[in-house]
Image 1: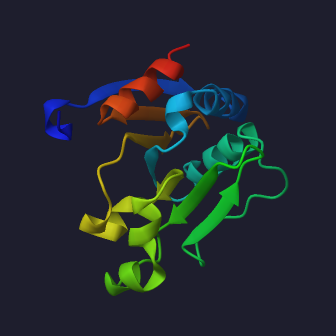
Image 2 (image 1 turned 90 degrees about the vertical axis):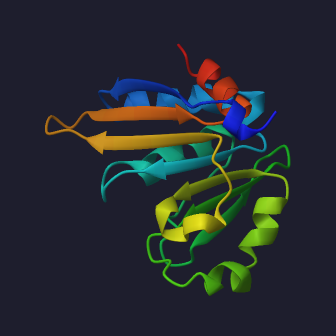
Length: 163
């Protein structure tokens, strides 16, 4: 069955505080489907994309400071159980040739969790995301979060965070 056979499922929720963001990240981290998932994060500057990634990586057992890959484009991590995690930030990505030069094709062809902020800047180089998370900062400091499951794995991830 192809991705086209699975129309996206969309859910919207509200994160009222950073504690809600952390709780969501913990539920997602507990899902076996996350192991080799590809998740894209969209939202304006300051919406909370990197904050969410930090909570998710900490929930996966990655200790210490989690820095934004804005300048490096990708930060690799490894969980205590040996799972590879790649955090991309394509905010400054402008030349498609960078994709091949940096070896991103190999990373996406291999195992591991891939998280990508500003995915639209990488254009057609990226595969279909299992889950797209759109974060919108509201005037009352809450976040409206829209989740798009685009694959069967994405649906499993949505089931994991249904609470």
